[in-house]
Length: 59
Image (tube, rainbow, N blue to C red; front, top):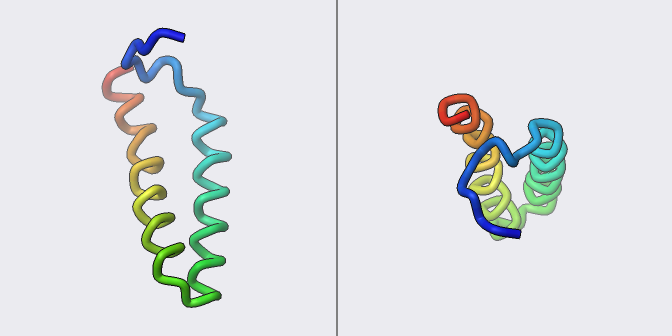
């Protein structure tokens, strides 16, 4: 698969499911008090959360 750098290749449904999974892991990290799990998933949630806006902006 060639890299196209196009956001058109990203499915909104896939991003929603990914974000839901990341948020569940984030909650798990908070419950356990594990800063590594919290930090990694918080950063991922921010990046995945920004992706739909980039998709909308860049089509």
